[in-house]
Length: 105
Image (cartoon, one colour):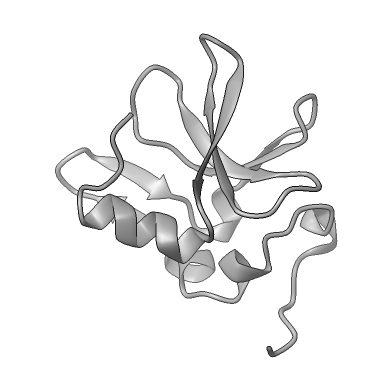
């Protein structure tokens, strides 16, 4: 696997798949929902209290998804319950699942 340049700020997260994909540059926009369900790299936000690097959202109920420190894959955070659930193995898999309608929250 080629070396991926992860910004120092995000090295605590296992997010090489995101930075090694076109999503880091372009993000992924859902025109129907009018939402960046995957943000371009400049739009990433960290929830430091939860050790969570937010890469996007579905646009409902404050739900976000991203990387958790020390855990592989993409996780969805449900703020009403303050609960995490694994949703995809990579940012690309999340993108593909969203586009195919497989993500049901």
